[in-house]
Length: 210
Length: 399
Image: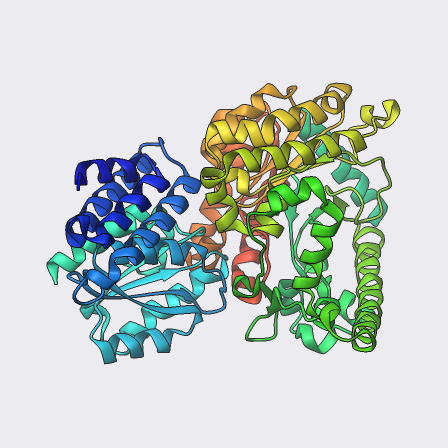
C-alpha cells in the first residue's frame, strides 16, 4: 500500500481514490492504522490549505465527509473501533441553538485525529454539559453555536463550570458563526475557532497537556 | 413629530447618504424579528399569536420607544400555519419568547435533484413540499382539514403583518428599506443566486456545499438551467428602473462560503447580468444576508458607484469601510456579543467609533451587526444604550 499516495489523494480531495485505497486496506492489502494515519495527515494538510485561502468551506465539508467514510471502511479492523489516544472530549451545540452542521464537521475531524467525542447534540443545557464532564472526567469542552443567542448560552455554560467549582479543571473552546476573539474574551472561554482545523489543533495541544 | 414628516426626513437622509452625501442625520436601522419585539413588550409569542391587534401593538412597542428611523423586513408572526401541516423546521424557543430554526428537523432530498430539477421541476418541488409538510401524506380528509387549519392561521398571520406595517408607517413614521412591507408600492427588481434552491431547500447546507466538490457538473447544469428560467422572467420597466426606491434586492448566505471562482460562477456574474442594467438606470440595490462576506466584498466595486447598500453580518465594518465605503453604503454597527456581554461604556465607545469612522462622507446607516430574533439575542439595556448613543451622535449631542 502506497500510504503517501493515499495522503496525497486526501490532500487533493480525490474521493474515489481514497475510498478505493481504503477498501483495498479493508481487503487485506495494507495496515488499517497506517492508512488512517495517512488520511489524517492529508486532512490536516487540507486544514492548513484552508487557513492559507487555497481551500474554502465547501472543501472542508467535503474533506470531513471523505474522512468519515474512510474511517468507517477500516473501523472493523481496528482493535478498539478506532484510535482514541487523545481521550474524551465533549462537543455540543449550546442551549436554544439547534444548528448542527458545524458541530458535525468538527466531530468528524476530532474523531479522525484520535478523540473520543461525546456528542451531546443540539440545544444542550449548561447543567447537562457540566454533569457529563463531571461523570465522565472530560477535560476538553467544545461549544458550538450559530445564532447570536448562542453567545449568552456559551457564557452561561462557562459560569456553570465556575459554579460547580470545575472551571480550572476543564478547557473550553467555542466555535461557530458569532464567535470572534472578542466573543471569546467576553464569554470567558479559553479559546475560539472559526475553522475546524484550528479547533483540532487547539484541542490536540490541550490533550497533550492533560 | 408628525409621522409623515419623520418618514420623509428619513427618506431624504437615506437618499443623501446612499449617494455618498452626508445626511442631516445618520439614520438608525433595526431589524427586529417578532420574538424579540414581543419580549421587549413583556409578552409571550404563544399568548398573542391568535390576536393580530395585541400582537402588533406589543411587537411595535420597541419601535415606538427605541429611537429607530428605519425598520427591517417582514417579520414572521406565526408558526401555526407550518405546524398545522406538520412542519417543525421552526419552533418556539424554550422560554416561549421567540422562534428558532430547528436544523435537526430539516428534511432534504438526494443528489438526484440536480437532474430532476431539469427534467421535472414541478414534480420535484411537489415531492419536496410533501416531505416537509407531512400533513399532505395523510388520508385526504385529514390532509384537507390540516390545510384548512393552516389557511386560517395564515389569514390571522397576514392580518398581523398588515397591522404591523400600518403602525410602523402611519403611527410611528418609520421608513423601510425593504420596499413592500411598510406599504411602499413599486416595481420589484431582485436577484438571488440559483444555488440557494439547493442550499436552503432541496439538499440542505452541508450536502449542497459538498456537492460542489462531489457533483460539480450536475450542480453547474442545474444552476444554469434555473438561471435561464430566472432570466426569462425578468421584465425591465424603463421608468421604474430610474427610481432609486423602492430598492432592488439581493441576498447572500451560501455565497459567503464560496471560493472566489464559485462566487463569480454561481452568483456574481448572474447578479451583474440581471441587476447592472437596473443600477445603471439609477435604481439602488440592497444586499443583505448571513455570514462573513469580506473576501468577496471588493467585487461590488464593479457595480456603479453609490448603487449598492450592503448590510454587514459577521464582517468587520471598519475593514469594509476601507475597502468599499467610498463606493457602497454600509449598514453596520455593534454585534450582539458586545450588547450581551460588554459594559455600557464599551457599547458607547463602539457606537462612537462607528460614527467617527463610518459616517464621514455619507454611505453609512447605523444598525446592529445582526437582526434581533430571540429574547436572548441581546438585552434590552444594551440595545437601548446603542440606539440612544447613536441618536445623540446623529443629532449633534454627546454620548
